[in-house]
Length: 340
Ligand code: DAH
Image (cartoon, rainbow, N blue to C red; front, top):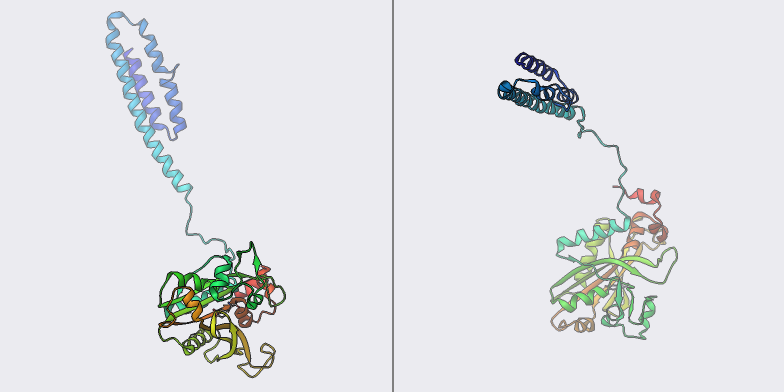
């Protein structure tokens, strides 16, 4: 019996040592320690051992089993580590590999112009704010000195949702919204979508404006002109000139239409400016004292100026886009041209 045990110990230890995979190790384990394994058979054979020898032989077999189990355990850990290392090596992903060139999208020209105007005004101290596209009649008209039945309401073909709720026809409601809750000094720009029932090559039912409002002591038309000149020269060229023509908006007094010298011909006259050398770009003016008072601002102490820029209009002039509908068709060939 003792020889048998010694032989088994030697065989099993050697076989364990020779294993190189966990599968082989498993086979050895079954061969010796499994249900019908050699060591198990040894234990079963105890009944043939003389009773007086049983305790001694029994403890030898147990010791053998314990020994082999710990050798097996050690080898199992070794092989597991080896297999892990192998796996790590063979399944290594090279994260430094260059990715396939995915074509990048481009910013929409409306976004480009909006961002450009915002970015040039922020250093002057302007805050950028956005307001609701679904607006009340009050902020869109009444607060801006356009009472019901005022003929100026015809200037905007408004989409009404109910009698008092509508899609804002301009970004000017933001003037009233902001002045109601803030005292001067005020310096804001408000970009956003506006809506009008109008559609042709230069009008779209949805388009974009950016509203500017400055309220403080001692502001005059000269401040307005200086700001607009700064915007125009940054958008177009350093020698762009600004011209004011008298106009009418209920919320400004005086009101002006603003023309820029044509950036295409430098003012000599071309097809873009229809031979006049000037292009009309926006409406502006000194905030009507009625509007200041409506919003709780003392018009004896403060004056203000405001302007409303049509973003598409600027983009059409700047990039030579002949039809406003091109902005909304999402034709990739059109959009790709604005890649930086
Ligand atoms: N809200 C006007 C429009 O949509 C544009 C405008 C004119 C805005 C004069 C102003 C302004 O702030 O002062 O036609």
